[in-house]
Amino acid sequence: MDCTKCDREAVLHAAYSGAHLCEHHLRASVEKRVRRRIREDGLIGDDATPQNPETWLLGLSGGKDSVVLGSILADTFAEDPRIELVALTIHEGIKGYRDESLDAASAFADEQEISHEVVTYADEFDLEMDRVVEKDPENMAACAYCGVFRRELLAEYAEAYGADKLLTGHNLDDEAQTAMMNFLEGDVAQMAKHFDASLGPFPERSESTEFVPRAKPLRDVPEKEVALYAHLADLPVHMAECPHSSEAYRGEIQQLLFDLEERHPGTRHSIMAGYEEFAKLAAEAYRGDGPDLGECERCGGTTTREICRTCQLTEAVHAA
Ligand SMILES: [Zn+2]
Ligand SMILES: [Zn+2]
Image (cartoon, rainbow, N blue to C red):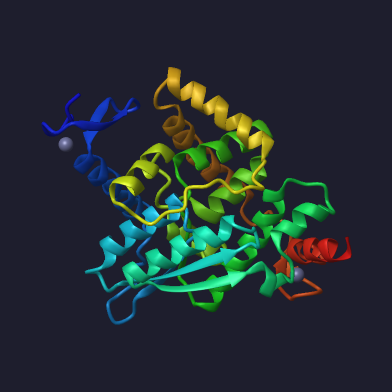
């Protein structure tokens, strides 16, 4: 089958748009969607100038999503001194797995000449995910612990770098799964939080929160296209799945969306269009209505509890 836009051979059929794309036009299309998302989200602050650039901190795992996003950002801003890109890799203490993806992350950052820092759960929390999984004091999925620790470190380092934005490589499939999970759990407050934390236009958001705003400029691109892009651009990525990843519910949702998309192409896009609209309304309705923020008794971090979730979990692991 030929490419819809030229007479080269197609490497992808995007059923949701009807397009057949060759290597060249697939890459161009992915890049275009990321740049459009940056523009439509108003990601580049009005105050950013070459003399006073914004700092964007990229969470760089070494997996395909963050490497593809980093590569497109580096290309996009190579000639645009309004944005300075820095990368942070978090080593959770997962033997084998994270060591390999850390190599990919370092190779990528070197290649792109992006300033790159590595932080470990061992240094920061005196624990490793391999041990957390073994002890499991709260009887939760590994990802639930890991997510709390990772969010904490990303936020902490974004603050320490004086970053204006915190960017992560979530793709369309990740975001559609999260949206569906929030819908099916009936958790409207969570949707409002999701919107405030990482969707919608930025000026509004930074006024409504004291945290460094988060952005997901890859969220219009399906996972399969991200993987194909990484392969075609010959990027250094680590493809293995985390050995502890066993979020059973997310797995079910993933399968459900996969089946729906097969039979009704465009489902993920329409879920996200509706979800973002709805989450925005929810965020407006809930704004100022949340529990009061205070300081954690242990670490002084911002929390709605007496002891923040991170301190609570690290203490539980150390006590187990
Ligand atoms: Zn083409
Ligand atoms: Zn704390």
